Length: 134
Length: 134
DNA sequence: TTCATATTGATAATTATTATCAATAAAGTA
DNA sequence: TACTTTATTGATAATAATTATCAATATGAA
Image (tube, rainbow over all chains, first blue to last red; front, side, top):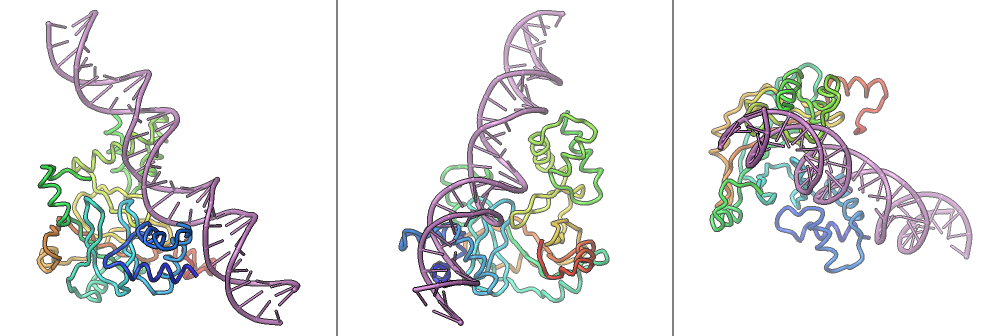
């Protein structure tokens, strides 16, 4: 059952693999898995609450997470990699403070930081391409 | 110059039109504008700081904003519409509190609420489809 | 074994957006 | 004005991530 393979592959990553990362990780061991199956099982595992899913922004791919607790992430605007952010804030207070027009029921929220990761900053310095995106 | 048309069209919306919304709005008056031009000019206007852009999440289209100040939004997970959220929080304190692994430089952040908007809740009640997405 | 159900792989379809590129328009200059 | 250069546009192809389709295979129960 490829669902198990998919789950194990996600756990094998330290960080936040994309569906394609997971696909390639499994492919390297079991040659004949379909990418559709990986997408299907990642979605199912997320539904089951077995893995986390990082909200994807601005056309970037979704990333998955061995952590299942909700926590903020930082996305590198240059390479798209996702990092955990360690910041505590009062989620309930935030929810209480929200004042929406009548009738909108909030079920969750996401806090996403954007910036440039260590590696991309290094590359930019080397190439003298600071400030140039992608 | 279609850039002006595009700008005016965005201002004409109360809410947060998608590129396609803007395209249709202009088309209804000036039949022969290209969608590529609308995308191009929306991007340029955003670069110029003349309009705002709502971060798009999970494969949804981007939405644009006549407001240019950064503020949180709520996205309806059913219809995708975007709403302003009125909540004050200490952005600087949040930034200061962020503890990332060395070298990641944070340039901005987004706070996105998710939930169900008034209209979709109404529809769900009528259809008895509560809890069913899209 | 037999019948029903679930999962898979291969591939087509979808959707939002960007890239390409020739045609047109606008601006600058002699 | 006439000519040249630059910018903008429209039409359309390309891209990229993801989902849908559907026949083939696997699984499980009776």
